[in-house]
Image (cartoon, rainbow, N blue to C red; front, side, top):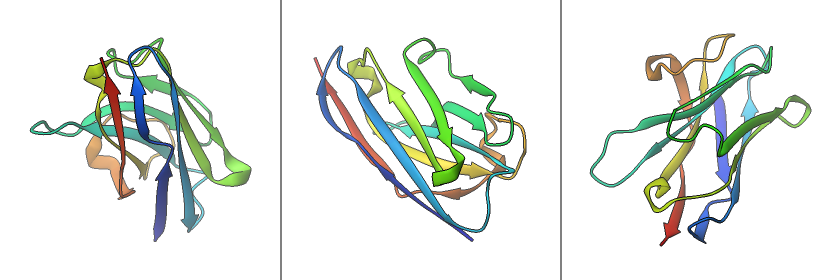
Length: 124
């Protein structure tokens, strides 16, 4: 089993920045990949960013590309999501998750472990 704990959410004005953290514990995960997803009220959960913990390769949703950066610290079993130039439409609950794949993936079906989520609210 893997336990994931997100932190770093909050309220920020449009144009501001936040950094989310996701700390993993339990089984070894450094051969897998991790991702961030978000869910706004009344909408489906959507992919945001993913990183291969082995290779460091990344992938982003078009809506966040060039604004968000995903990174990892394997020694700390932690993944980060640096969010810059935030927009009101970025408002959502953000979830981190572990996928049982070595390469990064956008496919939600591969994500086996999920955190509890952290709220991000961007005011206009």
